[in-house]
Amino acid sequence: MERFDNRLSLFLVRHGSTKDSEKKRYSGSETSLNRNGKTEAHKLAEVFAKTGIVRIHSSPYARAIETAKIIQDACRCPLEVINELSEVNHGQWTGYTAGEVKRIWKEEFASRGKYPKTTPPPDGETLEQLQERTLNALREIIEADKQGKSLVVTHGGNIHTLWMFLLHSDLNNFWGFSKTHEIKCGDIFLLENAESLFETGNSVLLSLTKGR
Image (cartoon, rainbow, N blue to C red; front, side, top):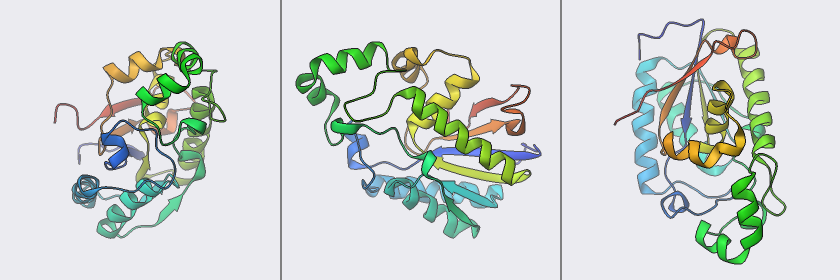
């Protein structure tokens, strides 16, 4: 990773695995890392200790903070928790698998499947809302950090909606996009030209763990 020499190198990772992620279950804020997730977090710590990370920003969700703190111990740098980096709010679907949701909330699940940009789960968030607050968080991080190497520990949904923003992709295509651009727990990305994200639009999201 030493080859990246941007004014601001902004890395993003998805938190380590949990029992819910392995069972494809909609998680809430308190879901913690399982054994595999802790192993993934320690591998990330080894990578970023060599990369020279000087700041870490994390979602407030337990699985993200656990991942971030393991990396922090290796990098010995400040850790900031940012609420806007949290996963999309699944509302009443929290704790259920997709199969269970499809059976219990048949109409709502179908509507969410067609129009996820503006259709939330009951008492939850739309993808448009998720994308907006994720971009707001990144704007604050970019404006504050300016230079050096920073890390954002967040969730698959946040990274996917950022990726779609960069590619000018309609959020209603989210489900297909997330299948062709799969993000696994512990995956690493680099937001190249991060400082241009809201200016020239020349920022690019690079996967650094593709094909692992």
